[in-house]
Length: 212
Image (tube, rainbow, N blue to C red; front, side, top):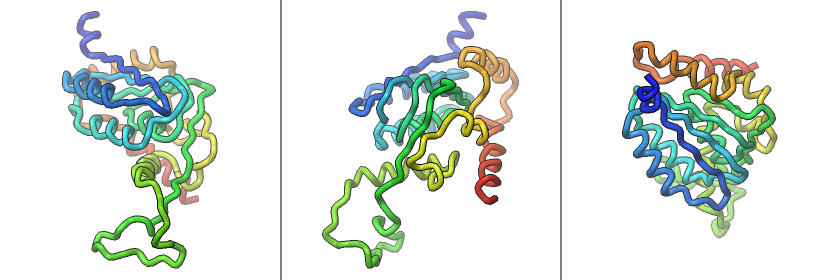
């Protein structure tokens, strides 16, 4: 039974750094998920920020995983920017009680992206010679994905504590170890074709909060 549990649970740690190179870790994550573990426990630790491009590549690997693999993310440190998205991508999440989330607003506007028909965006406030960092486009995409869980316009540039995350149904009350044990008891039941049955109700709950 112990050997089976070890095969079914894969622990994966991501050391967060503003200057980190995540190419090798992303490749290792892809290999780990290819083994189709029942649960992958991804632990985030360290100060700094995962750059937007790396966060989107992590997400791409998550999206290709087996439908039988459940992702549990645990934050041991406060998170910012792309690190926030990586944590949110878990089917279930835990976080250190005094940790915080933070993401800044994007410096881009809708006028900075070419429209679907290929025509230019006409904006009286845009200088044709004005320069901006193309990587900001990736960051804007990260914010779009974060917005599926938290209202970006209202929360960007502000610290978000665990109490608020609980209000949005994004964190569990248990510690990481006890929660993993609970996850295993749940995943021992026959799959009904969904990775996280509680995800949709949580999104609807957030939408109700925003429309008040």
